[in-house]
Image 1 (cartoon, one colour):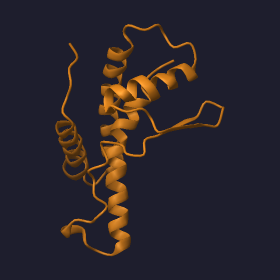
Image 2 (tube, rainbow, N blue to C red):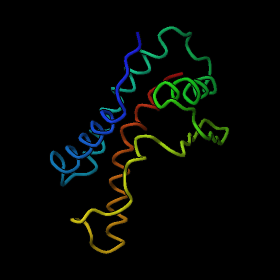
Image 3 (spheres, one colour):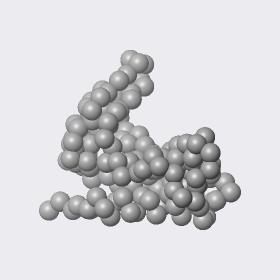
Length: 145
């Protein structure tokens, strides 16, 4: 029987992880907060890759692994395939999800406490969004060939 986690629980968990590491535990050291969030993502990625690849043979090349991520893995996690895949044909792949579920509820509007200049608000939004991306990016790159 497959186990699932509700989207709202995942959203809350990710928000709490980012908030705790960014604003409480490592408030003065954002690079350390990012590394810690990334480390959690690596661990989750390891467990997910073990679970979803247990029954299949080892990937023979990078392309096979990327196809698996874009079709099977992404579909299991987000109920949709990757929207776009780009490569430089030298081992670099860029996966694009136009409506990434874990960022879809994040607002681009600054909160009332952060209503400084538009530049400051934009920088804070970019920083917060970036912190939310360390987690999923680190577990996607965890799948090995």
